[in-house]
Each structure stands twice: as structure tokens, then as C-alpha cells.
Image 1 (cartoon, rainbow, N blue to C red):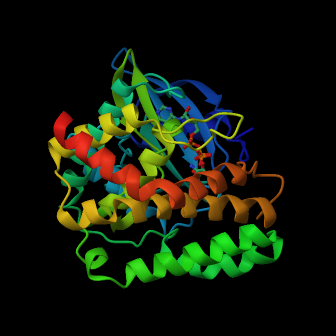
Image 2: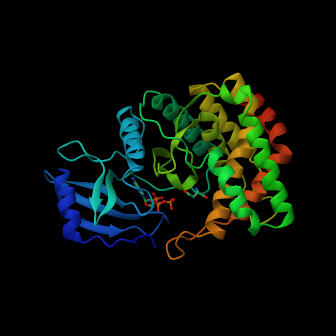
Length: 336
Ligand SMILES: Nc1ncnc2c1ncn2[C@@H]1O[C@H](COP(=O)(O)OP(=O)(O)OP(=O)(O)O)[C@@H](O)[C@H]1O
Ligand SMILES: N[C@@H](CCO)C(=O)O
């Protein structure tokens, strides 16, 4: 259930009208998603139907949202397929519904690919690299709010809820990531605005064509390599109900990296730190899932994801990331 704030038809119609999007003909609550209230809204303008998404933000504040919304607008202006926030006559893209922040964006065509093939991974790698290049001209800056400082703050908070071997793993990994972040290769990583949560459920495909990236509400300025690692850890692994869960799929990973590198080749520092960032990407989501699981902000609103999946991914990466990266980069070079 993802309608926490009931928006009346008349209220939505007035907002869409104010944004010059036409006359509202249909408003449907969206059941997916756990963070925000989302509605699909159909309007008719000059006899043509248009589809939009109205989001009422339940967690993010009026102060935090301009970075995300302006980033989407900027990327859309650069030709990257992301939802574009609609502006009112004063150019304002952050609106208000029942005192909560709200936005209206265009609806992307298609559906998420939860069982991606190499072709889907190639398309994501290609568009991710294009998005990174396009984002370099974006002038606003906001840190990744789920980056290293948040990990350092949050690990002590979840530690009392962990078993011995989990606690040892999370402490050791955090120490390792702090060590990596203090090194010169890390400082040399190319940076800019990144999505930072580009899982399979945040990308649309229509008939095999990638039609857009969405849900930018964990975006921030961070290393491009971290963004790529997050994608590799979700798109290019096995999601199985057994011990193979979290193991990588070399074909899909190779396809994603080769497509990424065909647009933006990885630097020396990035090649060197791919294993560390694969581990960082696993730690990030294990930690946020543990946090949501053990310290729910509002039990009625949040259906937390299973943290143990990312514990398995992290253990797998700690064991194999070095060898995995070496083989993927070698193979990716050949494939590219
Ligand atoms: N611009 C869009 N175009 C098409 N569909 C969209 C768009 N934005 C959201 N949706 C649909 O609404 C669903 C919920 O959106 P979203 O994933 O952003 O939810 P959320 O609650 O904000 O976040 P989370 O994924 O973190 O739970 C998506 O799975 C998708 O089906
Ligand atoms: N992609 C996150 C959910 C928050 O967007 C996860 O799978 O834990």
C-alpha cells in the first residue's frame, strides 16, 4: 500500500491545472513503493491525453527536495530519459499538497525488468555512463546522504541487534571502507551526481527499450564507481532462494561494464577500486536494510526489505570481489 496521503480528485485537478498540464480525467493510487504516496494522473490537453505521476513526499523535507527535483530536470534537459518535474508559471517545481511537499512528473512508458538479461544490463550500463557524463554540468551539490558518514553513524546503532559473526563482519567492513576512503585512489575517483539506488525496480523498459531511470530520492554527489557498483550488485547477481543468492552472473556483469566503458572508460583509480566499491555497495544496502528492519521509523508505513540478502552479497564480495573485478575488467576490455 503506497497511498499514505489521500489526495482528492479536485485537489489534484487544481494542481495539474496550475501546472498547465490540462484537465484531470483520472487519478489512480499506485500500490508499489514504500517511501512516498504516488498517484498516476491522466490529463487531457488540446484533445491529447497525457500521463503523469503525482508524488506526495512522506519522508523528505521541503529543504532536501530541490536537489533531487532539479537534478531530474537538468538530466531530462540533457536528453537522459528521467521523469521531468512540471513547473508552475513561476518556474517552481516543488509544490505542496496538504502541507506536504509534492511533485508532478511525466509517467515513463513500460515496466521494470525484475529478471534482466544481458541486453537489459547492457542498456543500463550505457545509460548510466551517459547520465554520469551529462550530470557533470549540474551545479547544485548535496552529499550522498547514505554515504560513509551515515555508515559510521549507523553501524553502532544496529550493532546491538546483530549476532557475533554479523557484528564482526560489519565492523571489519566499515574499518576497511574508512581505510579505502582515506587513500589516494579514492580521492582520485571521478565524481558527480549519482543515482545511488538504481535497482531493477527503478528502471523502466518497454519492449526491450530502456525508457527511463526514476526514483532519484537517494541521489547525491558521490563517485561514479559507487553508482556502477550498486547496479552490478543488483542487476548482475543471482537472486536465488539458496546459497547461490548474491553470487555474480559474469555474463550480465561483463555486459554492463563493457557498455558503461564504451561511453565512459574507467580510470586507473576506478579499475583499482572496483572490488572495494562492490563491497561498499553491499555494505550500504545491508546497513540501510538492517536499520529499517530493527529501527523502523514508522511501522505502519514501512515494509522493510530482507537485510540477509545483502549480508550474503557482502560476504560473497569480501571473498571474491578482487578476482571477480580482475576477470570482469579483463573480459570487459575484450568485449568493448
Ligand atoms: N515517473 C514514473 N513513471 C512510471 N511509473 C512510475 C514513475 N514513478 C513511479 N512510478 C511507479 O510507481 C511505483 C512506486 O514509485 P517509487 O518506486 O518511486 O516509490 P517510492 O515509495 O517513492 O519508493 P521506493 O521504491 O523506495 O519504495 C514504481 O514502482 C512505478 O511502478
Ligand atoms: N533499493 C533499496 C530500497 C530503497 O530504495 C533496497 O533494495 O534496499
